[in-house]
Length: 121
Image (cartoon, rainbow, N blue to C red):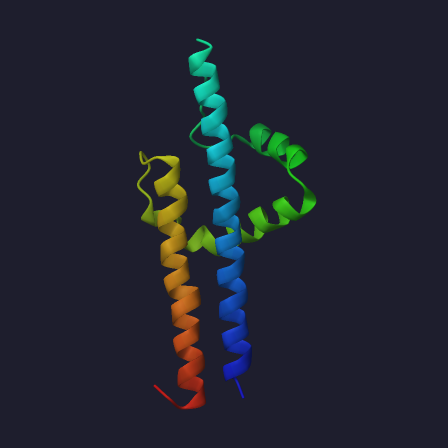
């Protein structure tokens, strides 16, 4: 009885986190392209490790509503796992490590719980 809702929840949460990480990858690839172009043109480039509240508001205006909804949901889902990324680590570690842990907990953990609820441990 509880198996189907738990399995659907595990799939939905995992899909949100993977979509959020995919959007991060696209954003990083685009940023790397712009940075490389700036370096070729001998222009200085500034890369902020974490956005300030002002930068966050600018990002919200630049992204579509759907993109921001995914980002906001992702922020909530990954909040308990932010400790996994060391403070001085790069953007990939700060995004990737919490996603891996969250997928283990939400995806694998809830999937196992769903199977356990069915009675097959």
